[in-house]
Length: 488
Image (cartoon, rainbow, N blue to C red):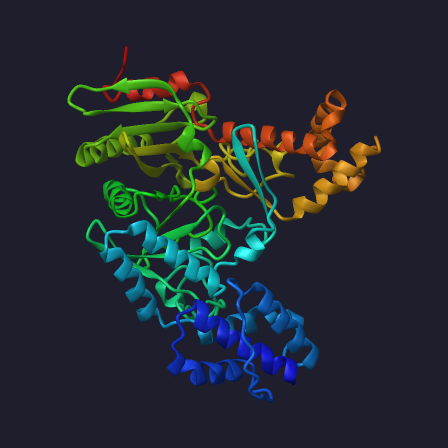
């Protein structure tokens, strides 16, 4: 067991260098690691580790433990969590270190440190995330998420992905901090106060973008969007002006994977929609700001102002108008026997112009022709994306299922060989035919690049599917009915 003893000593050395483990606590930490592994035979070796991330060290631990029969390969994820949980500072200590940096007014330093800590303690699976394919195409960012399974169950979203026994009540309750039920022994959170309410901030273990985090209500209350939501988003960017923050529409099929618990998503990346220009700019008497109809495939109104209260008031007017908006000729029905169908998804950045609140108009209405959603990805695109188009994708960062890495490789090989589409790949006919046409016209690209161009095109058309107003002039008309007029 000499190899295992050396790895355990390296883990303690790593925690001293990266996780704030005090020298006085080394023995207790080492014993906690041994306990987490079932108390295997151990002899002190004094081995030292100088890595800045735990991935390599944990992979060595896994190989040695599997070879020694301590745990099976299928149990590796749980044991990684046990070991790193034993080496991670307690929640109070992490919060104190975060708040100390925050109190100095260096908010970016605080979030940089917190995110780095969550990578170093293996809660954020940065090593795996870096392996996800990612590229820019058609003004969008396309990623293939190999770290998480495809999510297709709106009923699970409504329940918050609850577990048997009911504790924690859902996947994002604060009671998950340090909890073994979902391998969250390494989860650490930071306190927030948003519009006078107690919330907390944590990073996503399988983040879709740089420093992807979630702000979560301390109370387990269903997702909703109202006037207070806009105030909370502003409070957040006032505290962390280097982050964006947004809220999924609180409806099944369009509202993300956890609807049972009020939360926002944000982080340190400028998403494509943030960079979108204005197709039309409108103003209104008495409002110190403007409303922009975005030049964007989805239906988005960006409200811009330096006046916090004025901006909140306009955003709430837009929300109230949309939730009751009806136009049966366009397929927009706000409510029927199946429930409420109209909702907004607001997202906020703070820039030199002031607050920029983009309000994405969403509808989850279904029909006989489109049982998964009229304003959802249409069936011809389901081979690429059938999951909900939530807040992040509505802003132009597409998270495609991991299965596509292998499937697209097969399609590329068939294209290179000028072969026909196999029967089991029939759902990809549209994608294959269009990518083949691109490849035929531009053979210098190669089949793989032709498929990337096709994915960019498909994702753009999916966003067009989600647009409730296909003609941007209809969005202008919507704003005119609120007293806005186009600027000269």
